[in-house]
Length: 295
Length: 295
Image (cartoon, rainbow over all chains, first blue to last red; front, top):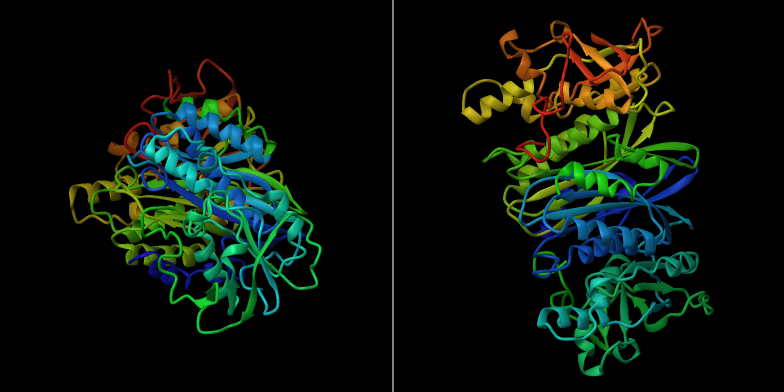
């Protein structure tokens, strides 16, 4: 079965309210007088990494993708649990892990090591504290809300291409992605829905609109791009810049962080996503899925 | 680097008190007015599974090993996060996962799916609530305490051999291990140290004695065995029965669950472990490590 079928089947087991029906990037549980936000991401050699990738970059990205999921929920990181397959370059892996943990200010709490592979696989589970409740979901966008992103797209794509093609261009944005933790915490009280862009702006906008039972109308020209407009279509299908995508009601005129308004939320129409006035026919080709080559 | 070297290096990053210096099976964090217990285990195809293993059994064991870590800390399961690599037999994987989650009474909260492999790898992170604080550790055994286990050893070994050799013997104990959750919760207020036996009684006793800076004196004849005494030495080196190993002060004369007294804690001597009066010279050959063939 493919990923969508697997998630469809397994969501029948995720009956706990905190699982959010497996339609969000995180789980949310109330414990004591706190609300915890939990997320888990895996990285697999050759699937999420280029041949010859520096294990330090792999470790950084493993931390960053989880921190980005916490950021999208306005959560403050508490700690991470690592699942690690031992192998070549573990000294570099530890260096990159240390750099990322220090950068994001999150401690390693524990984990597991094992042999096996290639390919090697790593998992990271991050635990965060909600700084605002209700914790932002993907489902709250309402007609009339504005649609926003927190920063320009395309730098990770260029970094990936530089590494793939062996050019001299800067690949930092791809190798060492950021996570918008301060922005997420600042935005959480103001948004109606929020997620991180991990699989491509258009695909993730499609998903958030579907989850909210709404239609997002998006203007390409309003989307900030790190590169030339000639690559705009590609940049809107690349996710690894890990900017936040969110909706906010018209009352939120003064957002607490810099953001670009790229469209508006409309009542559900024939398609969840209208791009430059044209309803899109399906999510295919809008970004990356795990059944294909990346992430 | 091997597992011990990796953990040695990475433990420098685990400065948070809740990480317990990576010397316990779990992390312990205070959040709100609760104490959370976190554990993560990976299962890798071909490392932890036999060729042709039923994916339903793989899923069961993935859940059981994590539940056993919670059991050893007297924790009540709250939920699990799954890292899953898609592949053949995912329908059976989901069936086994469902059976295990229902058996242990723990919900699936979320996770991640990806492509990649073979070999496939899975991770599970389990979150539990401490039912007693301080949460039992490996470090609290004191001279004069008794040394106990909660049940007989050897059934998992026989089940493994039946599967490996294709005989008709019952392999359930190996395929569908239990986790001693009720026993762990009942024992937590009474023990001075506790862990689950996942890598072999002798190896895990060695580790707990070392962590406690004590010597455990263990009597073979007192160790309950599921099989003939001819296999006693092997059964004491096999971990996957997931019984609990604990120490309790002499005042704990009436333990709340059935347990076998197999030895006593002494002041630290030349070796952490004395077996039938003979100090052992090192941990080699006492159980399984991840650098070798299993778990």
